[in-house]
Length: 544
Figure 1 (cartoon, rainbow, N blue to C red):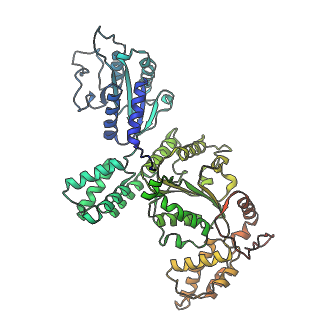
Figure 2: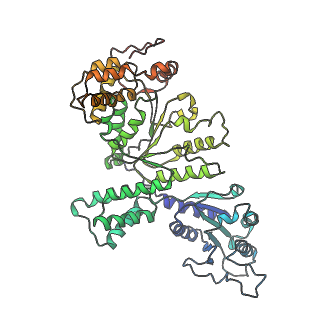
Figure 3: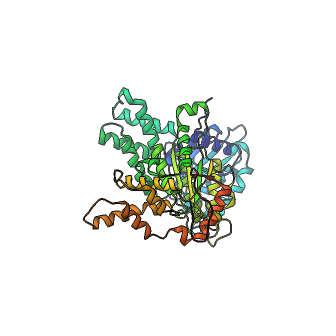
C-alpha cells in the first residue's frame, strides 16, 4: 500500500476554480506570498473560464504582464465624470458597469475576475466605509448577472477579512510551498550556481535540504539556498535550518526551541512513555509510508508539575532529529477583533507546511483558561480552543502535537475526547527506581556521570519529590562542594540539599492527591509500576 500524496497548492487552486464556477462574488485569499498566489489564481481563473485582471493602488487595472489594461484606461484631463481605475471607488464603479453591461448579440462571453492587491485597507471602516458599502452592493449584484457576463472579485491580503465583510466573503488560506515546490526551488538554485551534489549523498542532501526548508515561503527558501551556496559552496542543511530559525523567530508567532542534549536518555524514568515514543519514530520512514502506516497525531501529558513533561517534549524532538516548535496560544491573542484568529491561522498554516516537526503546547490549561466557563476576553479563549480543535481534527501534516497540562480540571472536556490524541498519559511523581534514573540523568547533564554516589540513599531521601526537585539537588550540591575547596560532590551533599527542600507533594498535598486519583482512572501511566510501591496517601506523606 502507498500513502496518497496531497498537494496543498493544487487543492487551493481547485478550490478557487470551484468557487468561481459557482459564481462566488468575493473570494478573500489570505497569504503573504502575493506573486506565488497570483500564479495559482491565474490558473484557477482560466480553468473556470474567467479572464484574469489585476489591480493595485499604484498601477490601476493591469493585465497579467503588469501592463495597463487598455479596456480600462486612466481618465484624461477632461474626463471629469469617468471613473479612475486607480481609485478604489472608481474600480468598483467600473466592475459594476462591466457586470450590468448588456452583451451585443452574438458577442463572445465577457467573464472577468478582478484580482485586487491593495484593497484591504480601503474597505475597512472608518476610512473605507464608502468602499465597503460599494463592495457589499457588488457582492449582492454579481451573482444575478448573466453567465456570459459573470464578474468576480478576489482580494489578496495578509490581513483577515474585515468584520463587516465576513458573511459575504469566501476565505481561502493559501498554503505555503510543499515538498515539490521547495524541491524545484532547490534544483533551480543549484543549477543557477552551477554546483553539483556529490553522487554519494545527492539524494540524502536533497531530501534533508527540502525538509529543512519546509515552512518557509518560496522566496525565503530560495534565499536560504542561495546563502548556503554563497557561504559554503554547497547546500548545507545546517545553514538552512539556522536561516529558517531566524525567519520563524522574526515572525513572532512560533518559538523555536533548542534541542535537548542526549535526547530521551536525558529523561529519567517514564519508561512507558519513552517506549511509546520510540515506536512512533519509525512512522515517518519510507518503509512506513509504503506500508500505509498513519502518521502519529500526538500525545497529551497530564501530571504533577515538575514531573518531566516539558523535558520529554524537548527530548523527543532531539531523539527524532526534527525541529521543536513551541506554540504560546496566550501570546497569539490580540485585543483587536479578528487578529487573534488570524494569528492562529498563520501559525497553524506554517506548522502544516513544515513537514516533520514536534509542536509543543506547554501548560495548555492556562492558555485556554476561560474557554469553557466564559472569560472576559471577548471570546478569544473560545476562539483559540475552536481553532485548535479544528486544526487537530483536519490537519494532514506530519506534525506531532505534544501538549502538557498540570491542572486537568481546567482543561475543556472536548480536548480530552478519545481520538483527539493518540494517547493520554498520566505523569506521576517518580517511583524509587525513577528517582535513581533522574539523579543519574541529571549528574550526566552536569558532566558528573562518573561520580560515585549512593543512588538508593538519595532515592529514599527524596520520596515524594518531583523530578525537577530531584534534579535541583545536583547544582545545590555543586555549590556546596565548590565552596568547600572545589571538591567533588558526595552523597552527603545531595542528602543535605534534599533535607533543606520542602517538596510540592507536601506544600500542595490535597491538589496532588486529587490529580493522582484522576490520573489513575482516566489516563495511561507514563511510568512502569514499582513492585514495592505503596499507593496509599496519608495526610503528610506520599509513599511511592
